[in-house]
Length: 294
Image 1 (cartoon, rainbow, N blue to C red):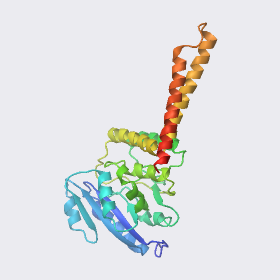
Image 2: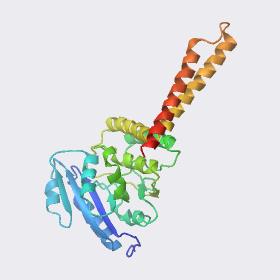
Image 3: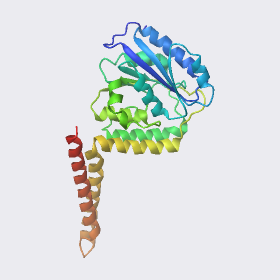
């Protein structure tokens, strides 16, 4: 069905990070090989074993047709992806998890858009989406915050199933964290640097084995990262909105005092207005400096 996919540069590195995935990594690799072979595209598979403490390394040592990188200990999801990207020999990189959550059979659905976009993301909005209940509120809030910061144009900010030009990751690799925020970062980096992004609806299955994500810790990390990236690439928007809100609060409070207090406007409204103006000016200066260094 997918044979003969037209792609200008038919060379793809499939990158698979693995940490304690002894129950699913073998079947995931087999599925990748089967699907990629059907596309008739030139590809390689790089698996980064991130210091697994189960038998994942033993399983991978028996695999053929892959390039295996073993981290001496657990360095993190992002660190593993960065190491894999540095070792990738092809101009396109496709990342997918080894835990059975993403539909490997949908890889061609992403690849077929690669000619027209710089990044194609599997958006977890298909008919069968199994996101753990405890992670749903955090995912909803992160999505709300990201789309507020990015004008509502990001469909799935941290999907781990995507294909992108290697140059995107290489150009901004210094910004990528070692933890689970890698996918969030590369999404925001691509968006804020005018790379074209396509979102393709996919299913999301229940993972095989135990998750290594810490909901509270990673949620705080995601929020911090979003603010850092937006402030790095679009400081005016980061500072302008709170600055204007503070100014409005000062004006409203000052008007209320004029109408209800015989002494007139007090110090607080003036401080709020001046403080808001300073924040707006700071955003403007940061934006000018940001543009002058590009």
